[in-house]
Image (cartoon, rainbow, N blue to C red; front, side, top):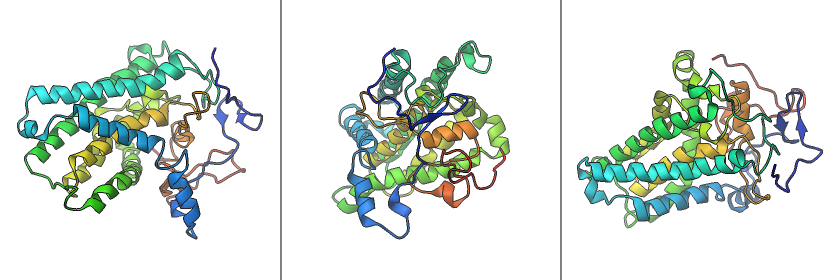
Length: 331
C-alpha cells in the first residue's frame, strides 16, 4: 500500500468508527467577516491554496482550452445537427473520465494515499443491494458518466444554440471589458449561492423521497459520487447556468460556469482531505463530507456563510468543542 509522506499527525483524530476529522473546526472564507479585514481577504484571494488557485484557476484553464480547441464554432450551431452535438458530447465524456476517473485511479484503484486522511476508512461498497449492479462505484459511474453527462451536454447544446440564434443576451469584450472580466470572479460565488438554495429545495421531503435520496445512498462518497444523482436533481443542480439566459454574458462565461458545476463535484466528493500527491495538491471537502454523514447540515459550501446564517452549520468538531448544529431540519 502506497502512502503520501503527509501522514496523519498525532493531533488528527479518528472516532470510534474510524472516521478521520481535522483537529480544527471548519472555517469560512474571510469575505463576509465583520469587521472587514482587507488583508485577510487579499491573502485568501491570492495565496495557495486560496480562491483563485488551484481549483478555480484549473477549471478556468480547462474551460479556456475547451473553448479554444474543442468548442464548435458558434456559426455551426444555428441548427441542431448531429456533428457539432456529438463533438460536444465526446469532449464532455473525455473530460469527465479524465477528471473523475483521474481522482478515482489515484485514490481508489492505485490507492496511492492508502487511507491517510480518508474521512471514512472503508472503501466503496461491493455486493450491496443498495446500488445498481451491486457495486457502489459501478452505480456511481452509471449515474455520473451515463445520465448526468447527458444532462450536462443537453444544457450546453441548447444554450449554444440560443447564443447562435441571438435569442439570449451576448456580452462582448469590446463592449464592456470590465464586466467581461468580472464574470469570472462572480461565477464561483453565484455557483455557491445557487447550490445552497437548490440543495435546500431537494431536501424538501417529497423531492428528497423521490429524487435526492439517490445521491445520499453515498454515505461514504468517492469521486464518481459527485454527480451520481437522479436526472431531475441533475437538471435542478445544473440550472445554475440559466443565469446566462437572462444576464448578458459571453458563451465562454457560460462554458466556465457549466464546466465548473460539472467537474467540481469530483474534488468535493472523493473522500480524502488534501493535500495529496506528496503534499502538493490541496483538495477535498470535509465541509461537504459532513453533509453526507449527517444529512441535515452544510447544504452550501465554505465561502458564503449561508449555513451559519440559516442555522444549518456543523463545524466538524465533536459536540461541545465547537459550533453545534443550530436547529434541526427534517428531511
